[in-house]
Length: 138
Length: 71
Image 1 (cartoon, helix red, strand yellow):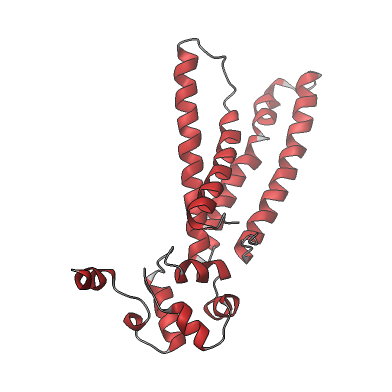
Image 2: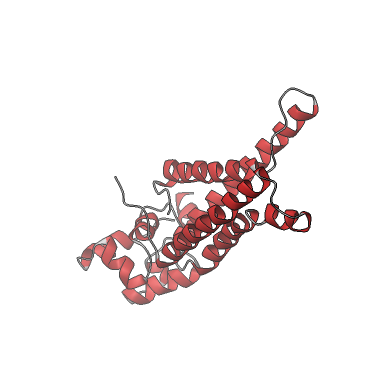
């Protein structure tokens, strides 16, 4: 089995994602606790509710920064293909789900699920790269 | 794109890893170029040509010339 491609830019991207994931947990857990026990003052509710979204947005930023920093053009192309796959997959699922929801055939899904679908799409993109080029990317 | 990269590398007894380090790209990039699965950008093609001290067209086969020869 071939080793994954570990470029310096990928390592930096990976560290950023680890830190942002920790930040996400640090924001989410107090927010869930605070809302459950109704201890968050009204003026702060929007801020506390939005805070966990910020590290997720940061991950998208890290992805963009990775594409700028990656010096290996072939590896960069693999990631571009992965992100295109993820975008197409997430938007397609959202569109189909939206119509099904509109006609009352499925339950309403929380908006943040689309991020999870996007990350699943990244996995499919890596699989597509592996099947067509023999390299899954980072 | 068809090319002579594997042959040129073998003449120098370089592994794909060796060539990748000289070009500052991954071993997987070298493999993808050698097997024609990935066409390098013009800057990378020039780096490859300069490394082997050859003109680009002595390393990479022009797809249009290859097609006209086939006709």
